[in-house]
Length: 216
Length: 377
Image 1 (cartoon, rainbow over the protein chains, first blue to last red):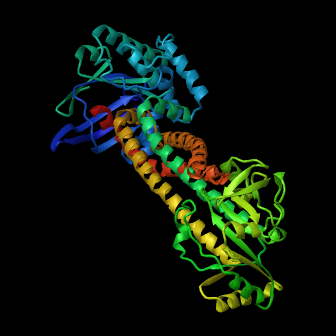
Image 2: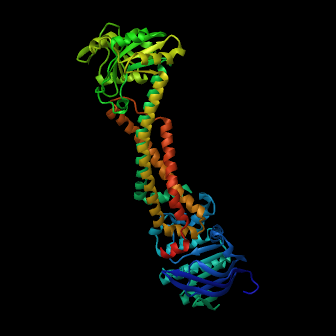
Image 3: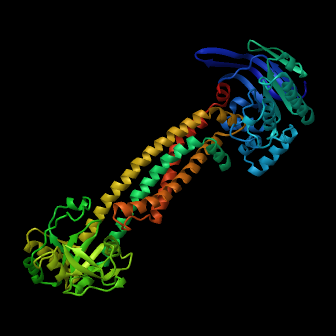
């Protein structure tokens, strides 16, 4: 890993978030590097919130110096997110859901939908193109989410408990799908999970404890 | 991305429909009520332009408040000028001719006008086209009817109508669309004098000066010579008509404006609710790379679709409403009209109002924090 270009570079990052007046220290002075093309699993609690201290570099750029629009652009073009609860837009079909981030990036309906269909076929949903989320199983919904994360050809696939809502067999299927993408495209994959068994699938495990990196 | 906005609207049909109803009602109210204003304005313009600009109207002074009240059927009592007063007017220097007119109100904006048939040109009636028949002859109990008046009586040429319980033969019916003459029953002056026992007097006297420049002098002289008499130049008449039209406009558009404010508040409430309900979805869109702009655009596009559709529907509905207003409220006249300007203006106003009302909800949508929205659901 050393000598390779770092796609993520966190230096002494702390994150505190307040909920109902209770301060939670999600991160306390974390240093972490993830290289391009790496497959890593982060095990432990994940935090969220506003007040971030320290430096977070994405491809050498300080994230804290980006404005909202730049952040949105980064989320759109550099990182593909897969969430625990799929987070598809309920009113839209599989194709429209996958095409949406591309539409936001300014592509036309036709082009975005063509690419969406192609990606949905790749994740094995060629038969479910025009189904809405409510008409699909959890596994199918997560496959749509995987296809969506790829639509803008990002450098990084970020999975936040991507199998958390799935039964173990379907979960393994989704992980195999993501790992297959990693092998074929060389994209950086970061999976956040509390499931050790799942984390062990990755060549590198980053263990978090009390807001600090315990081992990586 | 109008297609996405359209999908969003159609996936919440009830909410969309309720929002649309608010806009729809406001636009229907504006166009339906506005059509009366538009029609009256047109009528005023057409009837005043037909009469010579140097004509002076003379009538007994009356309370202006009677004019702005509803046209109650025939109950508006205007005192006639006497035959002596008529002679006084005729004797004033510079008067070329003074034509007496006996006018009596009937229901539904219609009125009977008695005028010397050789002098109808001063009435601006010379160029009226006849649908059938011809002018009545002086000395006979004959009448020429406007299109609406004929409809109201349900008569054709050769039929008789009853005026002040006296039979009058219909000898002519004007072509439809003759402006104010649609509403008139025109009879010879002497017949009117006889029927209404006016004693050679006149409801109004139309005075034509020998010289246009003498109009104001003659007007002043008439008011000095005769007590309790109003003389009005065409310019005064126009001003008065314009004042009346303005009052009517303020009333009708005022109601429409209030209705539209209520609609705007309705839009703000429903769209705000819709944004709150979709917090999670908006969060997803942001997390997948939608800029604040794109979120704002989406909400505004929904408002645009909603407002265009319901405003157009409102205009179409008011076309039917105007038919009902004309038939039921205005006694079969074609007074209320939806002009192209009114229709286009109402749609433009509806769209603008909705977009303004949607600004706050869309700003709320822009401010959604994607991480919190997704975590908290």
